[in-house]
Length: 51
Image 1 (cartoon, helix red, strand yellow):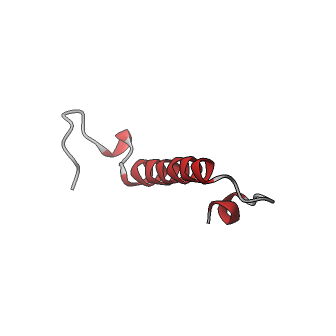
Image 2 (cartoon, rainbow, N blue to C red; image 1 turned 90 degrees about the vertical axis):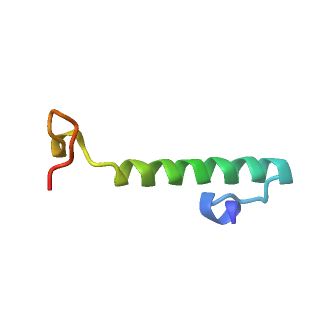
């Protein structure tokens, strides 16, 4: 799967593939958290959410 996602021509060694898989998961999870977090412009100065 790592080979397919990254478009690699050869399959990486097992440890390298595991490390790449962890890095990809971290990157995708980080992007999902950023997308799910509202921007500061949607907050009031007190920190409460606008309805």
